[in-house]
Length: 202
Image (cartoon, rainbow, N blue to C red; front, side, top):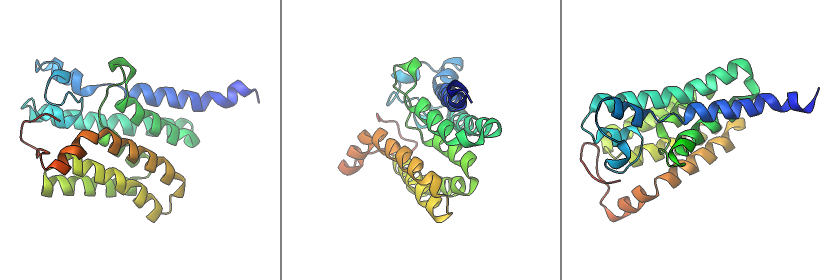
């Protein structure tokens, strides 16, 4: 088989995942709703938590859902066409959200998109992710803690469920989530991290 044919599916999976993951739904929805440029609001982040700072709960919910769906769709579509390349699409969709070329690589923190890709890769892991994320959001109301804990729970759940083929990938993605929350970690240590529902930078 020609080398270019062997490499074509993985490369296409990476490109498709990245392009789909890099769609900035938070920016698109807030602009369409006349809520301004999301990058000039609150933390400047393009995710649902920052959309919530516009006061538009519906927009925030829609952003979260679409960011989740794009991650899920990237993996599910590639898995249907080329199952072995689904993890590549998962990584690329997540990286696309966090580092979109259209926004000079300044994207979101990846929690919702990570949940989407995890659900598509192995839904029981995604269920653990969702329970940790939503459970901590409901009890602590600190988005950063809930997001980081959920991301860290994914590789742990993968190991518990025997999906050792996904463990290293999910560890890598969880580390990126933690890295993207660097400013939040500093505020957590200082006791100044805001809870959901309060307007604040970060």
